[in-house]
Length: 623
Image (tube, rainbow, N blue to C red; front, side, top):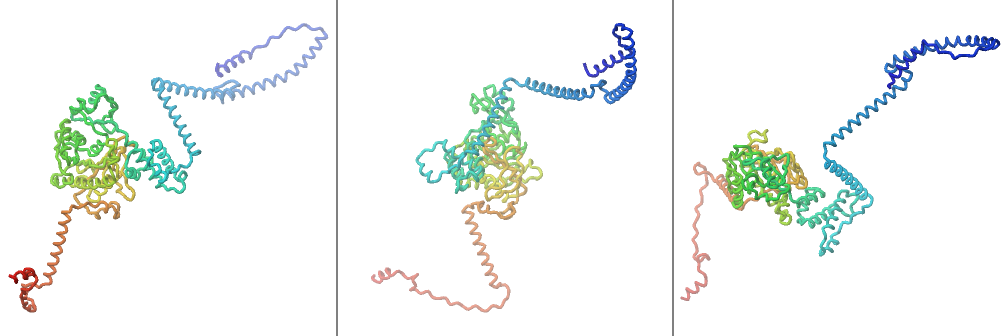
């Protein structure tokens, strides 16, 4: 029963009992004496009761008015308990609201639990427990390291020299590497007294080279590009194989039809990524991917994920003239052909004719019809196609291969710093030739129109990427534009003593330890005019740099000889002009003193040049 109903019932009872008299109990009749005493006693009582009844009536009236005022002020309650019923009711209302919220939350949890399967619930709980365990383990490890770790002793050259004949186990090398990384992370507190940072970095390079089978100079080169911890990650990731990726040939099939056909053959695959509409990643396969009927009929092409990025950045359009300067074995060429929808003209060039055999075979298998294969030196294409220039050019330049070590482990022991510099010199020549064969952009505001080219390499070295593009910026009237790739790491703007143009951040780098792809570099370039800039005409850094000394191109011996001859001829011409100026003109009448006649000297027959040898003279005299 609520408080309101209770007060109403009490009010009704009070109104009913108000007009009624209470019945008196029967009393025995007293005697005369008792009657007198009782009568006197009753009178006294009546006199006393009269004022009390009046007082009671007045108090009752006052209480009734107070109750009415209280009721008016509290319309929800009508009884005397309203003062303590109200907060209790408010608390009950609040508790009811909280109960309703808890019930709603429980219902939502029950609904979410109903949506999840039992296996999903179990896996989620296991993941949460595992995360909690890992966090606790990390905290404990940090605590123990900070409290109980001793200073790592870096082996000296003498100590290492004693262990030359001993085969160092990989576990010991790994422990040395991890200890050095910990010291370098907090060098001030954990370094050994009297040891410099360079000593730790040099020792780390030697341990990494010995553990992973690299040349020490390559590891030292990586340490100049990355931090020590990132260098270790890069080297470890470069030894792991990359996922097998195929590219759908849209000239013959759609990606979903190709995926359905391969799944029927027992191939487990997934879409490559959100940025690719034609890529498929092979997870597991019971059949060889390079020998399926779909492959032989040209429905797909084996191509790494990183090698698709340069073509996507170039974006060739139908009915355009496009050049691929290093086309073999035809993966990027066929991708450009399908983006051009088999229209326009595509020139596939490569230096070696033997490599073009694989290019032609792949183009025939994939159904490409708009491509012409040729074998020319890429450094001469700028002069060959000077009259018929191209709308777009792709230069996937030959490089050292430092980004594809997982596919070619021989790079670890065969490539040297000298090889990288020699390759960079060739790349500079190819890039300048490609710019000369490119049309000038009509609208410089559009970065997707004609007059653009893409320079890419499968290397991560700065000498083959940023330094080459910076050299082209100083030699030709070009600019770097956005590559149009949402992923990837921006290029370097500074490296050691070098400072590059700020637009170098528009280039893109891909790393195996970051993107799980081959190491790659992509730069998109727009041609502004046909000007050939000198070394001092354009310097993007605002001051003369020392890179010109290292960027000088070797001139062939024939050109040097011709230049020397030209200089000599100029000097001879200047001397003749000076003689002509000194000698007066014969046509003009000028007073000139008469020249003295010169007497011809008679040649003596006894001169040494004409006379015979003494032996011959003595022989003639004897005869």
